[in-house]
Image (cartoon, rainbow, N blue to C red; front, top):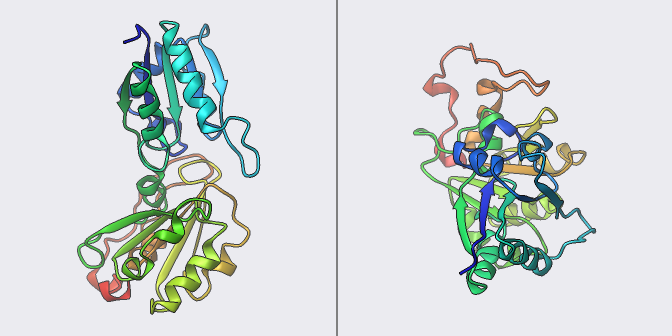
Amino acid sequence: MTRGVVYLVGAGPGDPELITVRGLACLRQADVVVHDRLVARQLVDRAPNTARRIDVGKAPGHVPWPQSRINALLVAEARRARRVVRLKGGDPFVFGRGGEECQALADAGVRFEIVPGVSSAVAAPAYAGIPLTHRLAASAFTVVTGNARSDADALDWEALSRLGTLVVLMGLAELPTIVLRLLALGKPPATPVAVISRGTTAEQVVVRGTLADIAERASALTTPATIVIGAVASLADQLAWFDAAGARRVHSGRPADSADMPASGVA
């Protein structure tokens, strides 16, 4: 077992204030920070001035750091008896390849610790005023990837179409296909849908619609984006509280009435 250690830290969905206390403590003691492209710069700057910072981020069509190279980097830095923080967007184990990195570290005999983070799957809807569950509308939610390069086509979309709230990550480019697939499986065209672009940041944009029109409405949005499909998406206007200009605000609207909530059958 090496003397070094790798901390896989969830940086959260974009808002730098959403990192955990433990994650920030690890970052402040790091010798090396290996970070993703979308991690807030304010977080990377929390590392000591002496810490080495390595950007291993990927962009669509541009992957200078394949996963095997990142794995090798983490092992090599830990073997130099360094405290390495692998700073990953969202949560390391939610579509973040954290499991693959841990396997590589374990195989190499490198110590590691997982520091969970706030996933965009729950944070982006929350910042858009969308509760993923609601007593009158949805008793469960499911998170899937819409990335066509992954195993998205292997998902049981027929089963997913019958569930309460469906959250799709990395699916903006595939949104038209996802919509057609759900409609073909009998999902009502009037099903509410919300797409949150750059959720929890000052660039957050929320577009609402239905399965019938959301692909067109959201066509100009940019990644990263979180898609919420189900009755709860209709609450975005009523429960909106986050000012995307950068200032948080406390919601002061009237309490929700049961008549305002769509029936769970819509989703």
